[in-house]
Length: 211
Image (cartoon, rainbow, N blue to C red; front, side, top):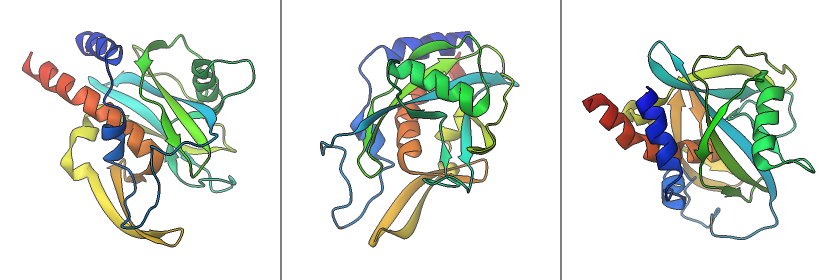
């Protein structure tokens, strides 16, 4: 496991897969729907993909938003939020993780994934990857978070957990690629972030298995 984490840290310091990996889980429509290449005045936001061990597996947290929130109610996301004045994006990601799920430990930051512009919500998301050598204690912020999901990273590699749903979104007929994790549909920006993460860790899992 230590070998995997060090290899991941090294990999995150190199050139990232970026847009091509993100686009694998972008919502698709025959009509013009959205483009990562469009430029907008987007608000910066920080998120944290926090890794930790559970019974020999490397896992991470996702949160399910409550049904009382104004935006994205009931959806699955990484801990995160909008950057506040005077803080770095990493500080944003750590603050939001502390506020949403109560983690206030000395997290080792392994690196950063590619920024993800999301014009439909008006944000540019900056995902960070962190590591704790043991599963942390969590405390829900009950106004925002309905529940916490613990996801084995290896589940991202399993074909049975990658699906596509046909739907109608804002008047468009769309195909929505998603991860089906812990019996929840993980789509949109969160799935696009996880798609890049999957692209990065897939060869590392292969190497780990061969050791």
